[in-house]
Image 1 (cartoon, rainbow, N blue to C red):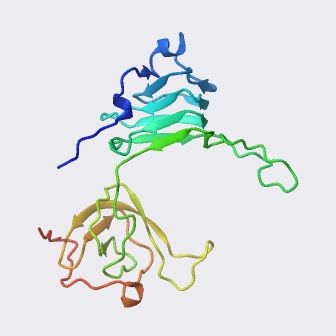
Image 2: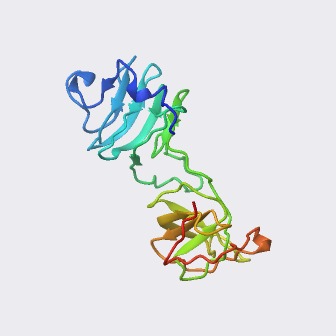
Image 3: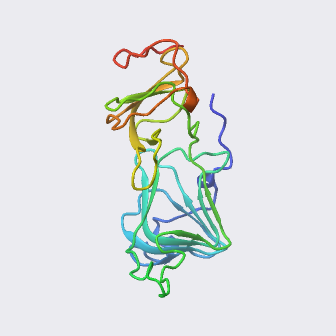
Length: 243
C-alpha cells in the first residue's frame, strides 16, 4: 500500500501560475532573462515552449514544478540563479511524473586557455544556489548498484543480478568492466538501456534485466567478484517468475 503524500509544494494555496500573464504584469516571458516577482510562489504546470536565458529566483520567492500526468514538463534555459527556492516534490511527496530541464549555451573560448580569465559565470549552463534552496525529490530506485549473479558474455542481451530491483524500461545502467586494464582511453564499461525486467526469475537470482542491445564485451562473475551462480539455469526465452 502506498503511503499518503503530504507536504506537496505543488498543492499549496496561493500559487501563481507561470503561464498566466497576470503573474508577470502583462505578458508571459518568451525570451531573455526572467526574474520571478518578489514575495511569490510561481508554479510551472506545463512545458515552457521557448528557450529562456537565466531564470532568477529572489530570496523571497519560490519556483515550483507541478506534476503533469499527460506529458513531461520541459524547461529550456541557459541557467538559473536561485536565491529563494526551487522545488519539485518533497521528502514526503515524491515527484511522480517526468521533469526535463535542459541547459543551453556555447563553451567560452577562453575556458581552458592558460593565463586567461574564465568568463563562465555560476549560472553558465548550470543552476547557481546563492543562499537559496534546491529541493528535488523524485521516485526512489533501488538498489543503486548490485552484483552479477552470472557472467555476461559478449552478444548477450540480458544479465542476472543478485538483488531484486525496481528499475524501469528505458532507464540506463552501467555494466562495469571486469578487465584488468581500465582507463579513460581504454575500458570495457558499457551503458545499457533496459528493455524489460523479470524479478525472481529462478531461485538464487534477484532479477533478470533484459536490454535493448546486446553487450559488446565479456563481464566476469565468480567468487573473486563476489558473484554466485544461480541454483537453476535461466532461460531468457521462457522466463520463470517465482512468486
